[in-house]
Image (cartoon, rainbow, N blue to C red; front, side, top):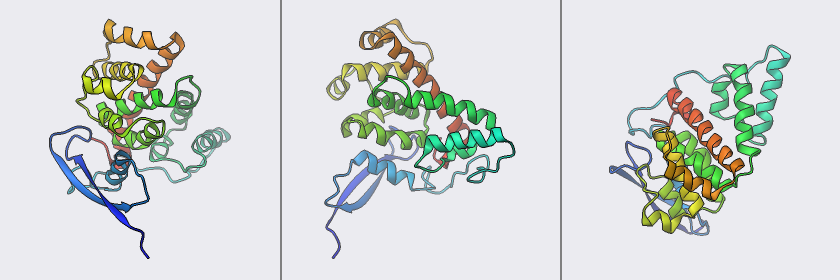
Length: 245
């Protein structure tokens, strides 16, 4: 006997992936027993559509991916590949890895730097992933959003707050942000927007961040935002994952 199902209606943007007046609607059938996060369902749904961009044109990555795993020709290349595989374990290599591995030296530096940002700072998962997700939204890096929005949700951010983070036009000084986000989360969201949109950061925005975090954490937040601006620009320029602007 089939398990009872319920229908979930999801709206998603047709042009700007995060926050757009023109919306498509998808009706998904999911088991009634599954208490699924609608935002995560949306991520999975749009991620499964290889022609998501306009439902007609299929996007293609601008370079071929290397084979998985790629061949290595020196002990140093073998070491670099094994380090990337170890960081991803138990998961397989991502399309991002299979792009970077065209250049083993770049992959080596990338793996070390991003690995430190992801696993070795003192930041909470919510603060780290909020910054990463907001960079993805502002820069239109859907691949980055797909990888990190579920982590932000798992960290305890509500569905409504995740929806706000995913809105490219979100006002983090407004009453809705004050209702859905803690002061430190709002400060990080505004700081991320400033660093990503204009690079320069006003004294007022920086003061809010400084009032919520230690000097060590301010450095780590700033490095996280900067690092994932690098990641998102790489993803979008090459259309890694075939899901970006």
